Length: 168
Image (tube, rainbow, N blue to C red; front, side, top):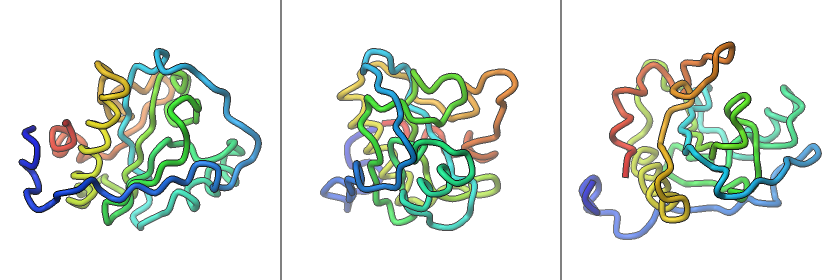
């Protein structure tokens, strides 16, 4: 879309909180190169409350025994973007495809409703910024690239209704 076309009153980027190195960890994810990344993947947390990157990291460690938060970015209800990892960290968010994805989680359950407008605006801004670093990458929902045996409805049944709204 055109700059400022969705929110003419937002004159500055959304708040971005750098949580790299501050979140709970349980071991380490492996590294990858930026050229390995093919997709920018939109997720929802599936829990309809405003989780923090720290809460998501604890959940991923306790429930799945992962090294930490599975997403590179978490977008809170108020539009705040929390960065959990560098892009070169291969965190876990799309089974068997983690080497080629950047995970962006919009906190909430978007099975029967759309994300908050602040989340949509921040997601669009973040995707535009990521495309400056990773030009030509495809923007998809988790379900769009899930492999057989790992099917999911993520980022929710409403994805098609708001997918175009997050495209830069």
